[in-house]
Length: 125
Image 1 (spheres, rainbow, N blue to C red):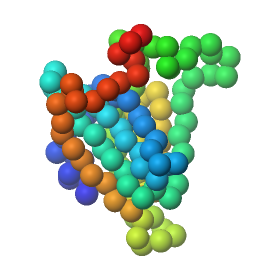
Image 2 (cartoon, rainbow, N blue to C red):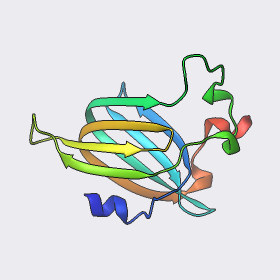
Image 3 (cartoon, rainbow, N blue to C red):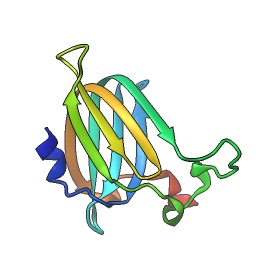
């Protein structure tokens, strides 16, 4: 599973969006591949999702108001390990430069799609 993720050559790729779907059952991390394509890491059947963002409580900056150039999220590291409490689940740790995440889920898919087939919140900012 780790090799599938590493094959995307994600290191330092700009993260374009992070989505929680179906009440957190699926998490998508979308990052740039080339000018015309993006990768979507889709974490499926999630049991536990936690994150820490580097924005301080005093910050008035809202990510929803940012444009693409203002986003400071970049793929730094993705590690995969066994989840100790249940063999059906896998634990992922993601370092997105100014955010870290821990996701415990049953599966992951990796998709490469044309960038123009995905809509992003920041396109109208």
